[in-house]
Image: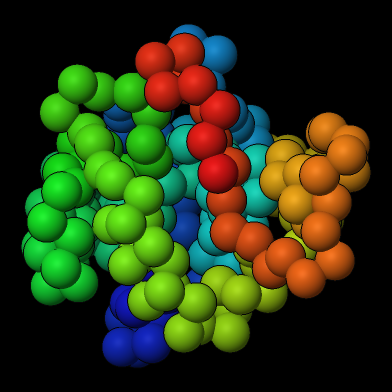
Length: 179
């Protein structure tokens, strides 16, 4: 999404309407920011929703905004992964919710993160402890909070590290807790 912004295809303040495929590939009990089909939400708020509380549906909304549909965006993700040298990665969805055909390695995550950290907006978001998402046509103002114990003590204590600047946490029953 940030590459699309950088290329002038989207702007951070652009309002996107969440489409019917908002829940594609997302299982029960997945992380969410309670974005609803038909909700009109800015790109910057979708990025914060995806990168702070792991709002899976935000990833699908951005995928449609960038590529027209989720499947095309996943193809773009795999193409970009190959360009970055992520040879042990295959994406099956936009958000990382478990799929047997969706996998990566710590090294490939490093390659992806190194590229993403080139974007000031990304660095700002992933180092944020929380973010207030403004009200939309379907939701009141809401606060999303980081689950990354290295940068925030909101969710877990004992891991805060003053020099940490992100990037992301995740959890699925199959993968367990990830950083």
